[in-house]
Image (cartoon, rainbow, N blue to C red; front, side):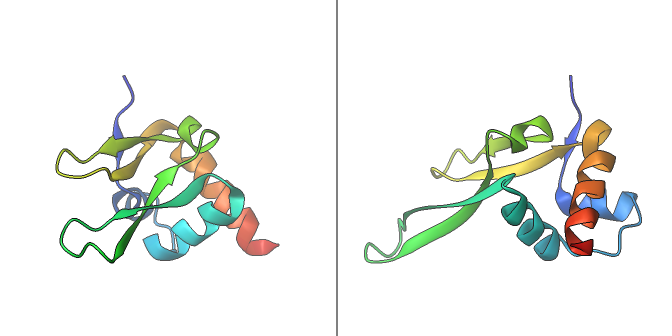
Length: 94
């Protein structure tokens, strides 16, 4: 069974000089992450945005469901994170 963790924790564990915000932007560009939206439960006229792994992104992690809402939180597999980090760094070099 894979042992997923947050982007922030894995970036720190790998000594990456990359913030989670920047990493998410790179994953969006690579098509491994997508931005989704749902109606706000507190403000009916507002829309809440969140991120989820795409089908291709699921090779590197999973979308954890939030029991209080329709949102998911992406978490990443420790054993494939080095490969994911290489892809992000290659995108930075483009």
